Image (cartoon, rainbow, N blue to C red; front, side, top):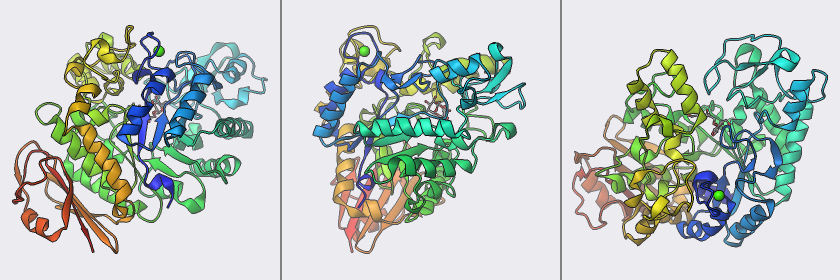
Length: 535
Ligand code: TEU
Ligand code: CA
């Protein structure tokens, strides 16, 4: 069995994880301090978001030197110490590969923008004028004027993140060289930032092109063939049809990819992430059903609710007040019971919540640019702030709440971004003292994945399809059966047949209420139960 099929990945966004030198920014030293915490949780792999040299215009997703560690995070020696310590605890490390674009401070771009005849000019995408009216993800045109050469360069993200020209073989060779350099240092793979965009066709404003598969197969041959590593593509445009193409082992592209369809249901189609719509549970259930079936025995899925770009899941789809613990566990159980490799985002394991800052306290370039764009579009500040509170990326970037002391034990300095003031009630130290914490529940979810084959190999059938309160499904194999039943609401609801089901199964593997409940045909608020039987 491929090791990554039973693994659980923990994502660290280092600048918000733990500061070890008092400058208010999380760093590698802080991660080294917390390796035993990660071991206690039981995770198998760490996905570390970028720590390479960067001007931090997009918090490190704008790389100026792929071979150097950003001094803000530490030194190469500290990186090697961290890698050794993780490996000594049996934990693997995957790094974040950001090669759809570089920083505008990368040497390649500095040369390219100075001289049309530079060998690096064709590393990027240049036109004499803005040939399309395409908008970037971070507001404004994708075409930015460059005075030195009197032409425009293409950027899908900020204007300080010029897109690389993947049609240029020299670019691809340089990327494969840096990948191999890091793999030779002993890392265990990569998460690949917006990797489906490397096949873009700027002339047609096409962001995802079939070339992505060709380049990924070429990359696999040049870098991953014969190595026991795993790669996960951030493929924002992946569909249930294309995801198997990325993760089908025969095609030798990626190990798995992130699909985002389940996290795009609270927006009005085509209006972007900020124009809010209420989540319909039955839409969410259908998306999971389609993805589970599309990848079953045809590829491999990733399972995630949160990351550094997404709001905190307990606030987004659970209840971050009265039922924070119950709903945090329910969301974990529903996700981890499915087929795929689960990803836990830092803080999710203690039920960290969204935040509401005054506008001036937000740091994320996407948010800052959006305010200007939406004001110009005539949005009220109330609607803008509602969008930021619900979907802003800084919701996921407030510092990890380690304890209830000043700055939650994250830093002895001034944090680069304000903490969520609820750290006095929600923090690791207090959570570890609680019997029935979300942390303890996630420990059990991670352990169950190791102990019960059914979670890795079972098929998926959705139950209660029309019931807009219940998310329930079965997983079946020749020898075992699992049934997950969850109440996605904060009310006690009827669940027809539940008491009968309880007699059909050998036992309850996990539930977020006391185990010895008298099973009736009702589910308590956010109640979730995982039934198990061997056949
Ligand atoms: O995110 C790509 C991406 O799809 C984002 O535009 C995402 O849709 C948006 O942030 C949701 O609000 C990756 C990284 O995860 C993100 O942090 C970077 O800002 C972006 O690429 C550019 O590198
Ligand atoms: Ca620091």
